Length: 261
Image 1 (cartoon, rainbow, N blue to C red):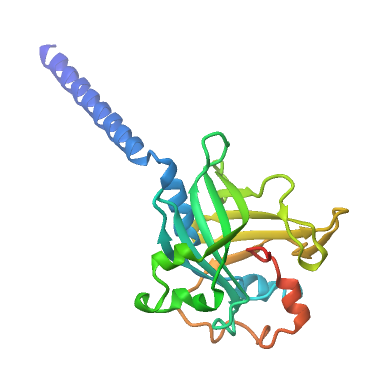
Image 2 (cartoon, rainbow, N blue to C red; image 1 turned 90 degrees about the vertical axis):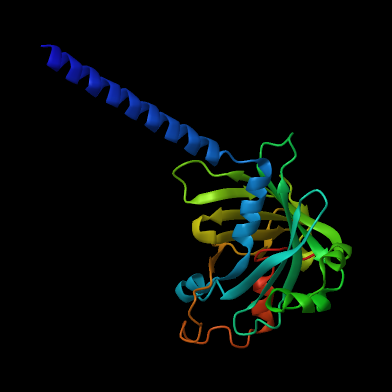
């Protein structure tokens, strides 16, 4: 009887220690997972960084989507910790000729807003000097102090929130109600939506509207979906779709991510 009792006590003691160990491990895991406001901003900036293409959409729906190359990389850091990214878009067959160049700035949302990350876009003062910025060696690029001096007028801001559990996205958001002033192609204002997906996939949807609320530019079918470039080259991607884009094509692509002034 005494032996059984001792065995039971030992088993109970081991079970208690196991519970303590598991509980401690979970607590450490939870503490490690605690995320600061700046961590969110850095994660969004990191997800935007790199070379991405809308190849899959262009293959499935060539009438409405083009294979666009989106290239983004760190360019400078402000004193408050905000990261400045250089961003450009080009048709995949002519990456050396970007049709859109912008600075992006990611930082935590102001405390009074119910969002996690504020992503703003700015025009570039000397755009010609920044063509293919990310593809150049660092010593042949404009340096951080020059970058900061070349940040021109503010264009748009998107407020991003963490996605709820079960959704495919990590962050999603849009421009404030009413959008931002925009005069391209007869528009009076524009709106912008962005979703940061898993595996650094980026979904963007920008649209321009006139005074009557009619959409005058931007995709109507849904957002552009940019996926990170595979390690293999793009020679065998699909038949030449955007070899020589005509002016109508270029007009249709305006607003595919960062808006025209």
